[in-house]
Structure formats: structure tokens, C-alpha cells
Length: 241
Image (cartoon, rainbow, N blue to C red; front, side, top):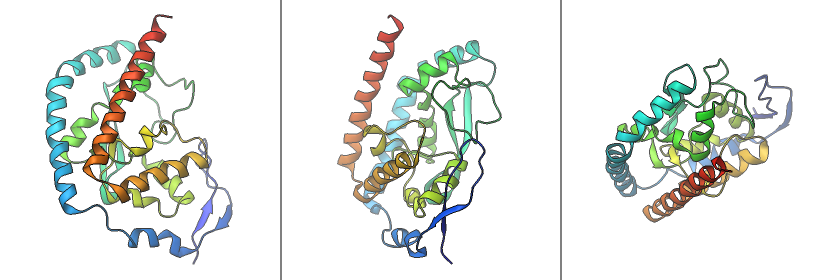
């Protein structure tokens, strides 16, 4: 039987009638043709993740976490952290941590954030634009659920939707999900608003997995750091204008 490609509706979470069919082989040939990065690379990558996450938690989160926590609590009612089940390596589910950037709402596990989304708080808007909201994920890196570099983990409802668009979408789970990745330094982050954005991000995630090496990881870390600095400078400048 041929798998069917459906159109998605983000607002109702319904799957309308099928629009076209794809050969069944396309859904599995990519997964069978590649086993993932080598064991030596994965050993050094995990070692780096472990040591760097300890260093970051000790030197940065040790003083930044209390400050952000106070701001989040003052800004809106609710917990400091937003914890959501997401898909990790080989499809294993884990609890992904973030600073809470939205008011507590019933749509958080189904509905993507949109431009001018009423759910985003004032502090949350700054945290999201600077990506500081992702910093608690260094705890996920420390315990082995995530890596510093890798495909970004999506909420489970998005994984289901995207799998209808790209039958081999689970190819992304051959490696641990990351705090940042190749797609993000290429400029693709935030909500996926259309089919093109889904395909482009999957393309760069696939390219990363197929070409993963320590040099590429260090390059992505450097680019992510400069993007972070530019976001901080831009947001700081905007607050004074």
C-alpha cells in the first residue's frame, strides 16, 4: 500500500483529504541507506557535550537562571520552566526544558507560535528573540537527551504533521536533537509557516547528519555564538529607541 501525503491544518489539527501519493520505498530507503555518524565521532561529540554543558551551567546558568526566574515570575503567573515531551534520538521521547515564554495555555502542545502571538509575554518575547529561552536545555545535554549541535527537537504534534509531508522525516532522529543546528545558522528558525519551510529545514538537518564531524560542529557553535551576540545587541538597541 502506498503512503499518502496530506495537507495540514495547524489551527484545527485536522487532516483533510489526500492530495497525492508517494511510492512506499521513498519512506524507508533513506533510513536503510545510512546508519548515522561513526562511533568515534559520537564518542568525542558526547564528551564535548558533557564537559561544555557542565562548564556552561556552572559559569553562566548559575547566576543567570535566578535572574531569569525572577523576571518570568514577575511578568506572568505560572512556572519558570516550560517542559514538553519531544522526540529524541531513535524516536525516544524526553522532556525538553525551556524558560517559559508564554502565558499558561491549553494550546501549547499543539499550536505553533505565530507572529504577534497573544500568548507570548513581554519577558518571553525578549527571551525568544535572543534564544535565551533555550538555555535550560543544557541540562538536557548534560543528562544525554540532547546535544549542543543537532536537528532541533519538535513538539510531537509537529513531528506527526511533518511526517505526512516528508515520509522519511524520522531520518532526523538518527542523532540526538540539538540546542542549535545547521538549519538554524542558515537562518531557518522559529515557526514553520508553510511546506517550503518544512522541506528546507529537513534538507539542512539531513545534510548535517550525513556530513557530521567535529569541525562542522565547532563551526556551527561559532556561528550560533555570533548570531546570539547580534540578537542581544539588536534587542538592546531596540529597547533604547
